Image 1 (cartoon, rainbow, N blue to C red):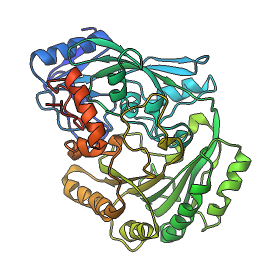
Image 2: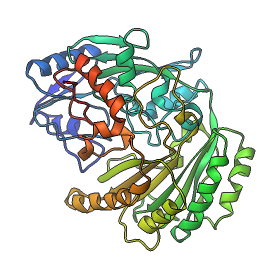
Image 3: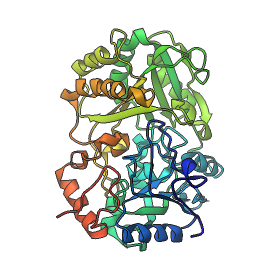
Image 4: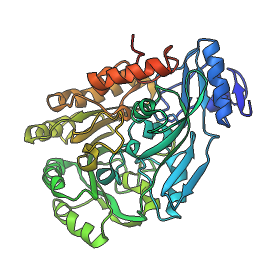
Length: 445
């Protein structure tokens, strides 16, 4: 091994098992801190020889299970980023975060289909689909723009996977999350975007119904270059939250528009007029500042979150959402976010993949924040939101927005036809289900 192998009690073991969600704990039998694809191959071969499951960890925003008895492969040292301005691509190592890609791409006037939080790992985000809140409505899922991947499969083989070399595995990896191997590097498209008109408008929470109805009426008529979402936020009274929002109950509209600032200002003017703003951060910005749109925590926090897709959002659903998380509710949720999809998110890419949520117009996410002793209450708060919206729930889910305790629901995530194909591919490449500490696709019988 060029990297490190750590056992419980070794110096560095606790640092390497730490994850972003402070309510989650990993206690593996061994941690391999890989520096190369060869290190990953050695770890996979060792785990297979001992019949141990494998778990891959970058930043650990989404973990499943405690990894008891497992081998964890930590990839953060595999952090090479190569930008090709001519082909408009990025090639990144397994441990790279979006905060490492965005500024390097920007130097070439390019932008990736990144997520809302810069500390999310690129590989896990893309393998789970990748719902970009900046460019996704015009370009589709991040998984749609993967050109190739380097993958160590359960047999220890390092494979170059693309549409020509291994078409079935290529289909499954892009949307199938961590079920089919350890991605050691991936190459994906970048887009000629260097700036956008974006940010958030925060309104008093008491005006939730007015803001929600205005946004719901407004967004379907906007161009695909406009991405928007609606969030209900009960902000904690902590110094990290800016003063107008600290400890406040607010609703927020988030925008990312790649047209001109003048056109963007004209487009959102009707929403600015709905109610007086507590804070308005919408402005023309360099793409390097897109994390400010959602302004999510970048340091580890304790929380519980789950998401569903909605197949429609009629007036009755709007009323129900106000009832569940509005000013007269007793919810303890920190955030309830509704993202409007459509556009390229509904279109199959040139090379199809396993992403299951095309055609579903909304993504709804509930987040409850608090320490582990409050876990029951956190889960109850999120369940109240999602169960309340059950009449409008879609029949498939976005795997990146699922909780650890939904790990056995993979068939419901993908739908029967897609799941059957994934299970057949799993049987080919991981018949022993070595990669099972995840939202698990079980190998076909």
